View (cartoon, rainbow, N blue to C red):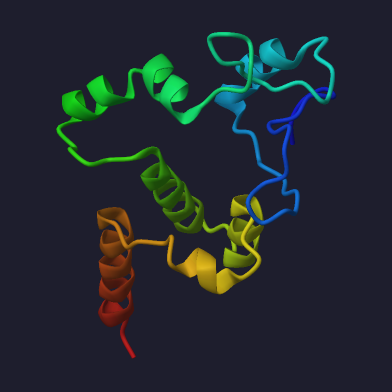
Length: 137
């Protein structure tokens, strides 16, 4: 999961139960740099005054408003990324109970509300049906 003794949270998640988060290879070097020689109970990122990072500070630090404008996606919020991530995990073939654990949901029914059909899933379904109907019986 996370390299070293560091962690991604200093407070319990909303559901009050800890959950593992898989780290994709491209993020590993950044996370290693951020966690090297860091005490386990310290936050991974800090706000501008050294405290816990707030939603507003995170928005400003990431240039969120500018990014949303650049992408032409008015109304996009960071929580939408959780929906997109859940959908990508599911499309990659990760079982829904594992996606549910990653998101920290107590129920897979909650996780189902995060999953959305995208064009790649529709194209994959069409390809599979074409293959099925194209087979001689």
